[in-house]
Length: 498
Image 1 (cartoon, rainbow, N blue to C red):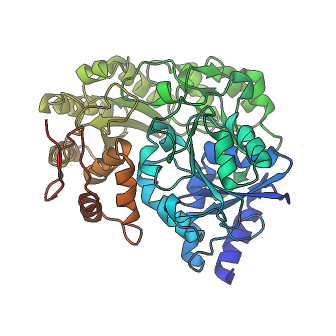
Image 2 (cartoon, rainbow, N blue to C red):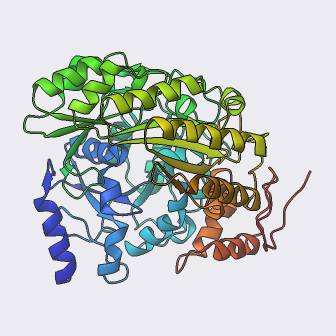
């Protein structure tokens, strides 16, 4: 390990609380295909780390793709002991986002492992891949993983550990886990299994490590609820995370250790969590700050807003998602303009510094009239309070009613973004518009609904990823889209139309 990497790791470890240093017969690497900061803000990543370390004869250590820039090729190291990341019995990868697919390839290579499963042998560690992406669409990861974990890991990880204890070889281990709930073996299974669903008594999950260099510096994360009771048709939360499970307030508070300065409550529908005010007040009484990711406009009231403000929240974050009432109704969002305006008034009256409003464009049946309504509505919000408008192109996902809808098209989305920015520019600084790339949203849509061939395309992008590179790689592997995603401008991709 060179001095630069050693100093980076030592500095980060010094800013951690809860790190597990352990020696055991079975070595596990829990690796993340992105930066340290993003990984340490991931409850899924932290939970797998804690669960494997809870097994008496397993020792899990962390590794991050980001550190490959400072390590020799194939010599990525773990943080806890500094051993080579690929020197393990189990190499686990947690993948949250579609656009980290190429990073999975880079991560395996950085650990000294061949990315393709068929090019590894019995001497290599078992490569397990889990995370939100595997529950949404495991198929692009199929060329790389020995086993893919789908759904909740609370019950799966102990079963995997027991199978590994019993197995005399990698092949026997795969034999033993075949057919387990939530376990998908790409070289054996023609269909995905049912998701593994953790019962309420396995919850909540929470931060094992509080890290100062996390995306949420010094914040202890705890999942107050899992699943979602809402019928929003674009979102995976209801289908991917199973039925709503609200963790009792006492259990949420019990897992928060003494000395924590700030707690971040996590959940797909925190505004619907029946104990949110009780938990918030209890934390404030302990002198602990409080944060939440976002709140629903129809559930917020002055009492909840006051608790959040006292807890240190400075910006109200609300998801409208549909640019017009017609499209919000189409998405079954169950939110009206009145709800959104009332939330803006609460933010103003209580002295919040900002009001963030998330919107999607490129939705099914969307027209210019819907965009006009969004622009007019944003002006009304700006009369109440300054607003930061975050706009993302709609990406249809599997396991939702919109899985077969067309992506709106790059030209269409870019034209609408340009119009929105032009018409709202005159309202600066009361309105700030931020948007994500239409081109990369198209790539995200390809991965979100693609098969193993999309993974093979990612393999070709290991040395450099770009939009043009993705188009070439998809063409080279013969990618054809059965859902007729519109072809990006200038691409020569073979599409199946009709």
